[in-house]
Length: 358
Image (cartoon, rainbow, N blue to C red; front, side):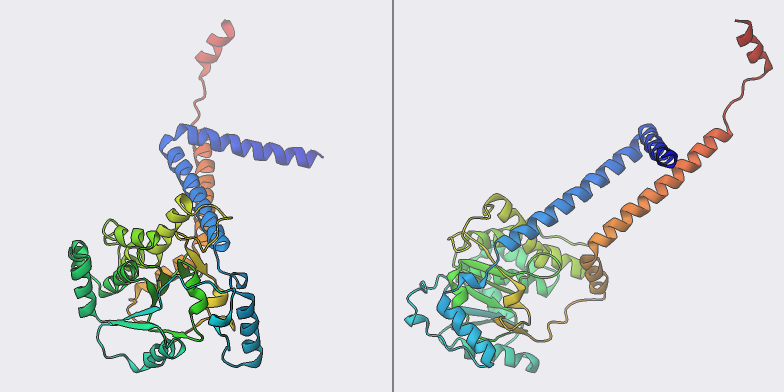
């Protein structure tokens, strides 16, 4: 029992010493408080957005029972799916137009992407296939969104223009945008019943390498309109692209959308202004995935390894920073207390005599 009381006294003494130290050092107190609130805010935002992605994810229950049955049979037999959407009375008319957009700098498709490109044409023969080069993409912006052309031309990296054009294509035409390194494993018709969707990526947020929407969808419009205000340079090529036009920019815009517009977990993901999330089950290399993945682009620089590591381990890094900060603060407090006790003034004999005579 005595050891417990001793431990409680020591803990309470540490808290009192910490409070006195922070009270006497206003700047450090402000910095520590701000850091704590920042970490709490980041954690809250991460949890809130992750929950929103989960609650708005597409599941097999969103497809017709007849389609799910045909899909399970094709997977178990290892054969292409046999399903006639026209004969299924429970299937609603497609909302997203049957258009597939692809982009590349020229019309000469690299050999390692020709198979992925042809797979989507083969699996979706009734779809219109729009192929955009750097030249035709700029002509499209000039013809339909000339107000954005100065920003479009001023981007320092071509990948930023490749990111931006996909938002404007979906805004104008609607359809499905697919990166060149993504293949189609089965027809995309079941995914056309949602007004907009994009895939979840790991460990956080959504990806813009695959997107779909109706023409003029309000979220896609918001994303396209926000490009100009988010333009800037962030330390390196990879970080700049990531936060100005790429996945982190899209994830940030989607966070605001879920918070201010589509904020009810009970709201159907098929509503006109809704944004559905394609889960890993239907996007990554699983039996239920609509897509396959080939080796991707090589635009990433040497900074990608560092950024990717920070991006994947940010929670451990934040925890490490907090622990290190508390350790440094504890050492400094102990040093300050020891230094203060070392130089404590001791009254001389005259002072002692004067006090005793009172």
